[in-house]
Image 1 (cartoon, rainbow, N blue to C red):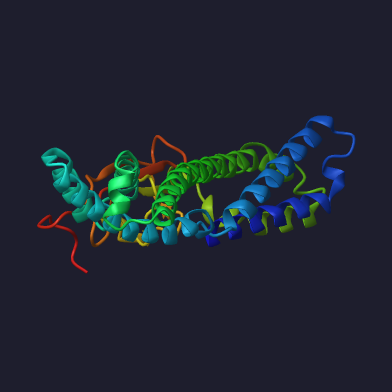
Image 2 (cartoon, rainbow, N blue to C red):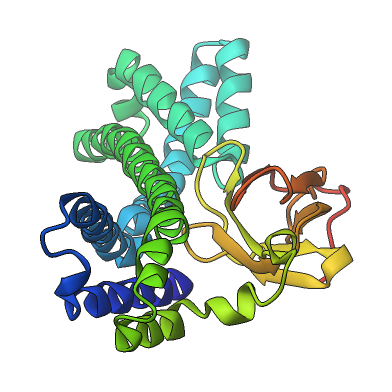
Length: 315
């Protein structure tokens, strides 16, 4: 997010320079329309940045403690379920309850929640027997409520994370739109007034740093790109922080933030292999990055936690 904030600040500085030189747009409705479009883009970008600056932990933080509590309750309640199954000579139920108890601390949050809802349903069927075996009505009610609440929390977490991912995609799109508007229209408007308004030209070009990016014929081919993207978990769709994303051929690498997002800058035009890895996760297949055909491409990875015996990157 730091890079996005810096990028926004630079765009806002350019907008202020344009505001300080109204002669560029006075009595020129088409030029003013270009300026208004740029300012409107920055307003929306500012809103998105403000929203995404809020820690993603605000979204799934409450889920973590609720999940921990429900896992502990599930083990205890599955234990009661085992007793019920034995008393009823129900081998199928016995097998399920044993499995759910053993996997209570290891299953994904979604799977664990399904286990808890099933156990609550079975305990409800044999509630009288469960109480005779030691389960109190208060404990059962609390467990069932915890399972129902956690199920709702999971759905809400997914919705909120989906909203954040949508906001990130919109942010990347709007940054690209702003860059294109500068490159193809505002740069030309300012360059046209280089002689008549040298202060505007100097201030604007200083911020654009165009001389360093387009200093010679053929510089268009040497333009640098950026690649952005995200890394999420297969089963949960949750973002994965601390994943190393790299383009080995360029010796470029970065890490995902708490939203699972990453950004790599200053990539020359060409085709490259981009990979990601993190200890404890299966390394996904590399993806092809082509900066010659795409402007600021987006690359997303979906990774799975490694099971015992599977190879993952060394720490």
